[in-house]
Length: 344
Ligand code: SF4
Image (tube, rainbow, N blue to C red; front, top):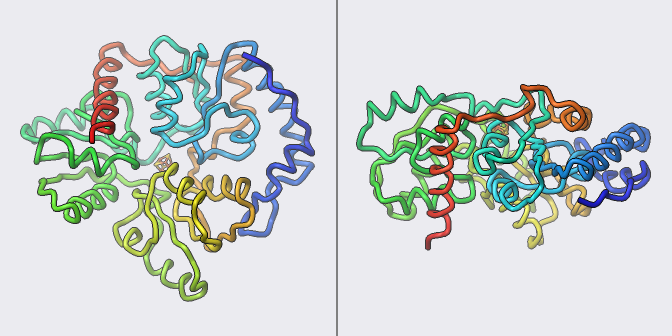
């Protein structure tokens, strides 16, 4: 792998100068960029020496996305990127369930997770034991899990979905009894969408939520529309049905970014994790954002220091390890997603 040219603090500042908190305060002054640059350049050297790549979820901090990441995206896109790379080491700047997914898809590669706080309120709401119990209680149901689940949970489910393909896969699977887990709000949205599509399926839900997306509410949207009549509201399907009904566009992380590439909207309310707003501030600095986004404490706990640490001296807890039997069954669950997602 080739070493990236070293970056300077001025170049990093120029790239990130439009990332602004509350639309006014620059989060990347030159002095801060001067602190990051030695870390960025050392990480990029080590990546080349070790044939390693950094995969970064769009929710992690901009100095990671624009400093050291080789692939940036959402859980579905990064799962595919993890399979496409010929690197021998994958550093996954995100949360643990995403590192699990990369390891399930690439059992011979070393997958490292740098974050100390790498949980997720959705993934942590359910265990493999919970699913085994549910399956005994609901033997006629097909079990569909959101990708935000551990390897143990995927190993117990029939197919997994992401926010970009959940509706289509629930419609396409050959069962009219579905147990969807763990995201209750996305589950409510699936039920609404099936009604719209006139698809008659019985759908049971687990009681998990993403703490970042559940805090948005429709009243806040109405208030901001009254202040900004030209406002365009974009939301993620982990928000509640009320929020989605008040939105102009609903999509996964990558769908939201794609929508913004082609839109004429200039004043935006982005109802998802702040990382999407930060990416748009870098890539489309003419946009005006109103309201406040919410930060995921798990995603934002990834740091350049931790990425450097796992490349220099990984600890046992930084290395993803999955039991072989669990890996094989979880892989079948993910492969079922790829198969259903590509069916028309
Ligand atoms: S944003 Fe929500 S779903 Fe995503 S990692 Fe954070 S807690 Fe989990």
